[in-house]
Amino acid sequence: MTPRNLLSAALAAVLLTAPAAFALDAAEMKKILEVIDDRQRNGGDYKSLVYLEQKEKDKADTVREALVYRRDADDKLMILFTKPKGEAGKGYLRLDKNLWSYDPNVGKWERRTERERIAGTDSRRADFDESRLAEEYEPSYEGEEALGKFKAHKLALKVKPNIDAAYPVIHMWVDKDTNNILKRQEFALSGRLMRTLYYPQWQKLFSESKGAEVWYPQQIRIYDEVEKANSTIILIKTVDLRPLEANIFTKAWLESKSR
Image (cartoon, rainbow, N blue to C red; front, side, top):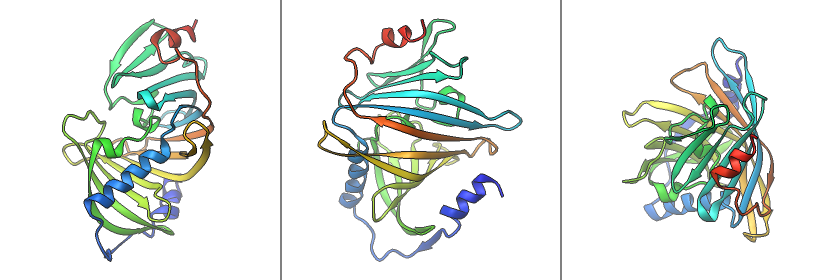
């Protein structure tokens, strides 16, 4: 049995649509999204060590190591790849709602879209950034479902006007007890399913700057629904919530790491 089948057996083999005792109203759904966003957002800075394991058809599996830096108060994001040697120094920088990529081999910055495959994997910028679901999407209620041993609210999210998002429609299963995301499906405007994501493990860490706990997915399993043989596992190994250097979110800072 493949890893995907094993995961499906653990999380979704018992996926049963159950008639909801009641439907959540707009205010209740918005509150769920706000809770998800707030729990993953830090009042100060954020740094994590991340591994990306990529599987592709007819290719050897690859593992990349990256450092992810966030400054949630200013909506800033930096991804710096450190391993393997051929990827070291490459990175992404989000500034003023623009995503830029940098390749030290050519010394060039290029603007990217939200659909950009980070380092050629099945991940996207939003998989590493703070959550902005309540800000970017309008929810509708799809009912209550059993996802494995969990009882979940299923929400359908539609992107708001003038928001640049990788996918305009998202279906999301949220654990009723914890408000953690269990499963997420992302669709193109045509209605075609593009990616399926599972979140089997969540961790929390107390933030002094926030004065509360920050939650993060310790593992994200991403399945490409177009190229069916492709998948990516994101492993967040460590998280540090201490303040970062003041000038870290600049092109000059990232360029200096490859010299």
